[in-house]
Image 1: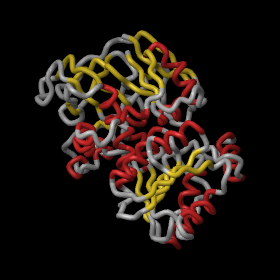
Image 2: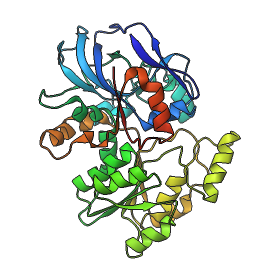
Image 3: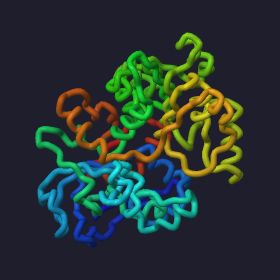
Image 4: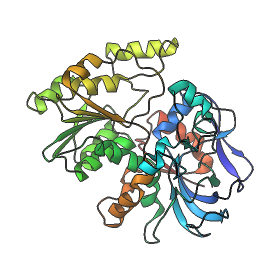
Length: 390
């Protein structure tokens, strides 16, 4: 079969690889009908995530048709169309029973690696390094889905693939980011980063009752989508001093909640701390570039919440933790507990409350995925979200 494989920094290729097989009675094999390039994939492309190996199959946003099931999978049948969560969860451990699906204790066969880095293991993730299990991803013609009796959700026939695809990651990720803000009527939510997750965070904040959403980015097409599709007020951080502007827009108080949908590779325009982040990362003196997070902490009102769906991987430098302490901020973050949100968000789609396909700007063949990565990384051709069809 064809699959997109990682061969090094800025080097991904479509290769012929063996088709997956059932390895465990709780497995299923999926014929992938749609898959997508995620902003998190760029961290792999840029070499920021350790433990990648040559030939690893990428991709954690995918859906398709069940073509084979293991003997213990009773909830799926051959021919079912399913969306597959990017988090792999057993359904039985301490964390799964509490709907903390991305913290599963049992699905990462390489648990010793994250335990060494973080103290505890992570759940297994599709296509996201050997630190998270070394599972083959879904930017391929077929994919093996472990614990298929727990993860995938069946998609009704009247929905198009593109309406359901983003249940696998970015819609639940944006929704959980907004839910973590504990939004109350009248609240103002500020969102850093208007990429796909940021777009869903904006829409989700309104779905959960926010009165205002202020979106912050520097890319014109992302700002425009946040304004037109998301009904957000927008700021360009290249043109304005965000802290002063947010205080002005909120009567001197600051936003009630701030969402960092940027993560570890923030650019930061021409600010001094952004230049320092880049220099330290280049010299291997720091791992992440947390400019957006610093701004979010600085800008959030006293007693507010900072929600972090943006991926961070290592150690952060010069975080204004004193300000966070003195202002009594609440922090909520983490990989998305996708299984918790699948059915509620599927119902929102079926009820016409949201059509997640609004975020798609590019549709490409799987064979063109390397060019898609180049376009997406370099923000060319007004690209916001790429969907691949094997």
